[in-house]
Image 1 (cartoon, rainbow, N blue to C red):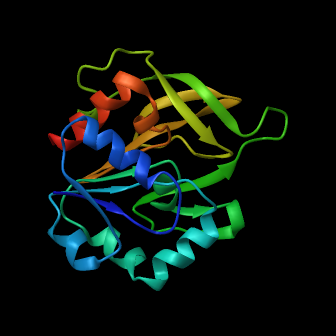
Image 2 (image 1 turned 180 degrees about the horizontal axis):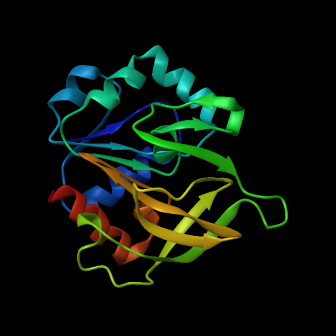
Length: 192
């Protein structure tokens, strides 16, 4: 069973619908016991960093998520909150990735919304995904490049399109909205 973390943010239903299309059973939950027992965990995200982190703290999920042992996939804001800190609302993240999340410079069109190619793809999430594949992005903040970076997108500046550390995987793009390639990435995660 796949647990999709519920925190009153957006796109949990979109993620579940994408898993349904792949015939994968999932549950949307904020129950720590269900999350701990799940085979895999997806931490989706659409929303504002500080209010989302407040909600996670109310349920103790800010402490639970970094201690999970099964594969965990953060998506968009989920990825950003897995980082050390976030300029949005001056928010302290979970620190899984020792990375700062910064706002895009104001000399570009923000938010970054639409299809953009990713490059420097590395790791298990990108099996059977061609280099330069287009993914769907919607965000105003980005994760810096680091030793955890497994793919890169260049919009205004190069940033981490995905990260990986131990059992923690994260993507800035929305695989659930990225067509067949996004489905392949979700399928790769499920098969870890």
